[in-house]
Image (cartoon, rainbow, N blue to C red; front, side, top):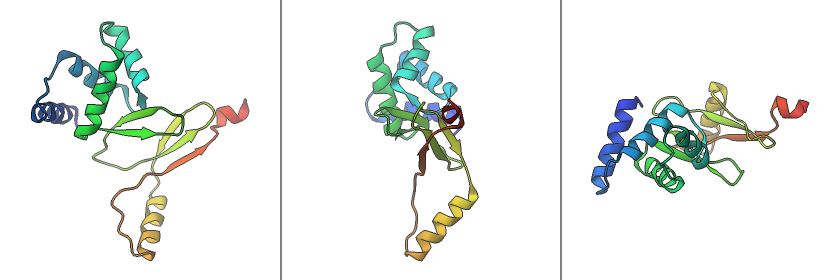
Length: 145
């Protein structure tokens, strides 16, 4: 989703919920969109604190939850006890490789996997609405160490 549409969607959501569109929420949204994906609250908080030392951790945490509630972000759990957020994809679906040693997360797309999932679902009479594929292992850097 383009940045302007994402920002508009968030402002509209705040309005429908009776919440204010504050400068801090705007700064958090801007940094979230700039930073990329798989950010924990702490990751985003530390990025924001460099430029805006008055932003609080709780504000960042609550704002990320608002992003997820309004559909501009998705909350992910990769088995390390931390919630991470990534911008909602309106385009291509992707899957994840997660290193259990260092926590590195790699996004990938593979049409063969998508095709196989569709075939398996059809064999069992299912129509897939959504899915999530997460593969856990060790990245090449950790295996070499």
